[in-house]
Length: 216
Image 1 (cartoon, one colour):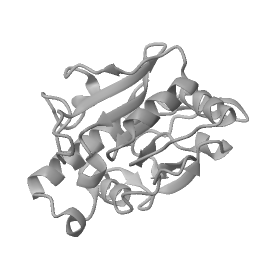
Image 2 (cartoon, helix red, strand yellow):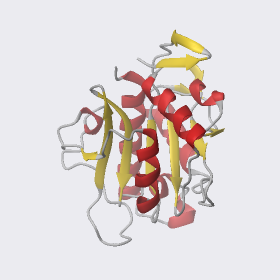
Image 3 (cartoon, one colour):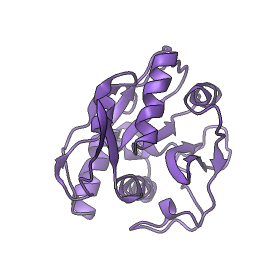
Image 4 (cartoon, one colour):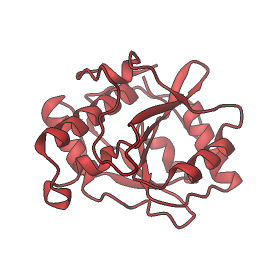
């Protein structure tokens, strides 16, 4: 169930199969390429609509981290390669969104890690990212990932890891690190990844979307 704040606290439970529900990419400051992976979310949406029988709008929206429009989206995707900077007001807006039931998926496209960890401390100073166990439900929605996140691109050769921020018992932010799921969602012509890897990335993405839309 997705709970949302829009000027005042209301309960909003669109469900995974609501008609024309929209998801968004997060626009942030700092100079990092928040706009990276332009074909990724449309391809993930198409995959979800085809394989999960969802009715997501076929294109993602763009939402600024400090905007009240943030509260319109049950799933928000954040990616990039470099610097991220949140003002105090932006951090507070993101905190309010996540406390109200929103869900943020941070997908390190390589190079975000030292920045995003610092900035998310502004959002939840009291929380640390923890590595989620392979038994966590996010790895076991329609598709089972018994060994956690799939490794799509090598980068530093480190293992793919899934971290989370858990607020009052609820996973509010999932951070996919060293996996590069978004590159796996891109059009095949962009990276020419083996189809097996693309399918793993899309299936894991579908799991994340499902979890974001249905978890309490």
